[in-house]
Structures are given as C-alpha cells and as structure tokens.
Image 1 (cartoon, rainbow, N blue to C red):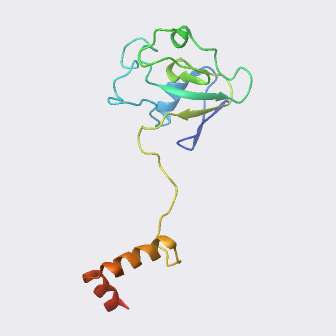
Image 2: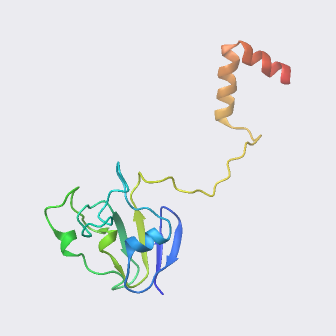
Length: 148
C-alpha cells in the first residue's frame, strides 16, 4: 500500500492505490485549503480543480507514484495563479506509490510534540531580562530581593 507523508503536519498515512490526495488528507484530518474562507472550495459540489485553493507540493518517491498533471492544472488561465514544478492541486492528484507532501503555510496550527517547561539553567536572555529589571528599579527589584 502506498504511504503518504505530510511533512508539515508530521503525519504518515497509508493510501489505497488510485486514491485521491485531497480525500486522503481530509480522512487524516489535514486541511490543505488556505486563505480567508477555507470552507469555500471546489469540493463543495462544484467541478474539481476550479478554485485552485488546494495547492500542495508533491514529491514522488518512486516512478509513477502520482498521475501526470491534469488539464485543469496545466491551464494558463487559473484563478489564484498557476501551479509550477512540484506544486499540484490535491484534488487532481491520484496516488499510486509512496509520496511526500508539503502543505502551504498559513493553515491551521500544526501540532507540536515539544515540551516547554521552565528551567533553572543559566541563559543570556534571562540575565539580560534580570539586569534590565534591576536597572529599572521599582517594585520588581524589591520583590526579587524579598524572594531571595
């Protein structure tokens, strides 16, 4: 079964051969639509490929992993600009092998696996911050002295 890796979201999903990339992304909970109204796109009952809002960069990891660009993608008269190079419309891509997909920035927040806990390690930023607050004087410096 072909594997599709969504780089920005750090998600890898298995696809059925011949499956549409947009449908697969939606099943995986990934929105590829960007702009002011992400819910307004051609998948809402209009012919696929007219809105040009599902642009992604597709990198096939093997020969024939995706179909060739379609007539809708190659049209010189595109709403929201043309697609070039590895950029494709997700609604026009048929998956036949392993691929890597890069979605555009500006979409929903990407889930991170980072844990940002406070640390007592010395840092230049913290030293500058404390020095700035000490030189400003006032209540902050007094509170700091009370804590020590």
